[in-house]
Amino acid sequence: METNGTKTKHLLVTGGRVQTRFPPEPNGILHIGYAKAININSGYAAAYGGICYLRYDDTNFENEEEKFFTGIRDMVEGLGYKPYKITHSSDHFQQLYEWAVILIRKGLAYVCHQNAEEMKGFNPKSNSEELLTMLTSVIVDYLEMQVKAGAKMLPIFESAAEHLIKGDFSKWCLPYLKDIHDQLTRRLKEQSPPLVPMTSFAKDPAQFLTEQSTLGYDTGHPVKAREKVGPNITLQDNFDPQDMYKTREEIRALVTDMVRKFGKIRYIADLGHGITPQTPIVSMEAFIDAVHKAF
Image 1 (tube, rainbow, N blue to C red):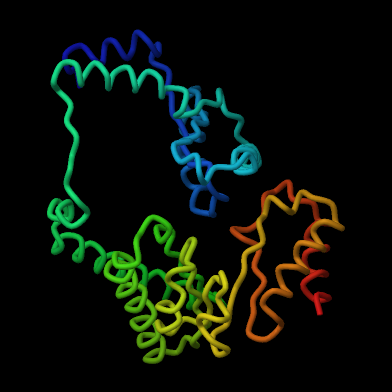
Image 2 (cartoon, rainbow, N blue to C red; image 1 turned 120 degrees about the horizontal axis):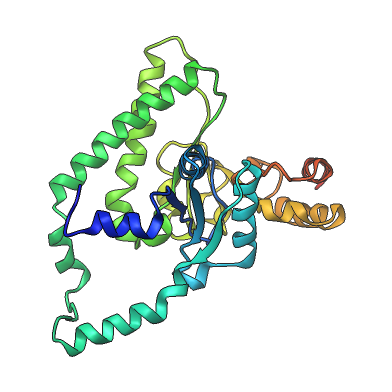
C-alpha cells in the first residue's frame, strides 16, 4: 500500500530485498520459544534471498552481561543462520537523545507525573483479566495435550516476575498460576492421563517464594528459598548454560557448590534453559557426575 510515497522510498532504499531482524534482549539465556522467532526472521529472509540482522535490544544495562551476547549469537548460528550484520539498540541512543531535545524545544514533549496507581487507569482491569483468563484456558489445553503426548513433567514459567512489584505479582500472576495448576489437575483426574509433577518458575523470584509455595506446584526456584518455604516444598536451581563452556574442573566445582547449598532432600538440579548444539559432551558428563557426587 502506497502511503505518502513511503512504499516507493522503501523500495528505493532496499531495492525490493527482504530485510528482517531478530531483536533479543541480552539479559538472559534464550529459551526454546526463541527458536521459532529465529527461524521465522532468518528463514523468511533466506527463502527470498534477503538478509537478517541480529539486533541486540541492549536497553537494560544493569542486567546485561557479555556471556548473554555471546550465547545468543551461538544459538542463532547453531540453528544454521549467520546474521547479515550485528547491531545494537544503543547504537541509536545519541540520535534519540537529539530528537528528544528537538521535541522539547518545540514544545511537543511533556513529563508524566502520574504515580503507579493513577497510571493503572489506562489499563482497564476488565480487559486485562479477560485476556489473562483466555491465556490460562489455552495454556491448560496445551499442557493437557503435553501430558497425553507423554510428558513426564510440566515446567510453568512466569518470565515477567522480575519486572513486577509484589502487589502486582500477587494480583496479576498468582491467581492465574493457581488456576493453571488447579484446572489441569482437575481435568487430568477426570480422564485417564496420569498426574505429573508441575514446577513453578518465576524469573528472579526471591520476593515471591512464600506465595508460590501455596499454589500447589511441586517446585520453586530458590533464592534463600529453603528458609522461606520450609522442608516440604521441592526446590529447583538452574545452572547457567554458559558455564558449560568452562573446563570440567570448573564445572564440577560450580555444580557441587550449587547442589550443596540446598541439600539432597527435595531438590532438583536443573540446566537453565538447556544447552546449545555447541555444548561439549564432556561438559554434560561433568555436570551430571558432579550432581550425583556432590554429597
